[in-house]
Image (tube, rainbow, N blue to C red):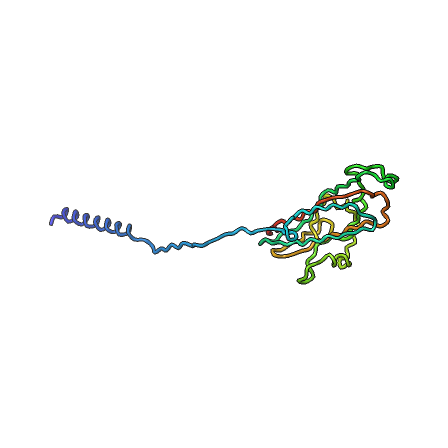
Length: 221
């Protein structure tokens, strides 16, 4: 056979083999497996502060028609019903003092008599203000507060609390947060007293203010 013909046949055979190999390579693939993960659910946590049974977070207090020697206590149950821990704060609104006119005895020691001119908040003493957990599994009661279970005679006047936010167990700022964990309950109590030696300057006076309880999510570090 002619040499040129042999070379032509050999070249054609080689080309066919290469093309066949390329076609085979094109149809091959590595082993693979794909899985779909289903049923994934991501739920945002909740943060909810409940004060007492009715869930009001702002308490309005009005004090009037009282006499020297008067005292009163308030107790609020604070519960974090959400799923996240929160930092608890208590804010006193500005104290509103009204004179409500002047009685004859009062006019001897007081020359004002209008709105925002009263002196009652200046003389009302905050005997007790604190936040604590209940004793074991038992809830605190007003009796616990009034029988001196809590010794918290700070001696500040109500006016000194006006417009301030308290974020600790104690009635001053700067010592860290009172953390209310999910499902945890704390009690906040307040006791006010009008000293027996206050005199006639507070006759007919009244005072009012709001206390607002707030819960802010604990930020992760």
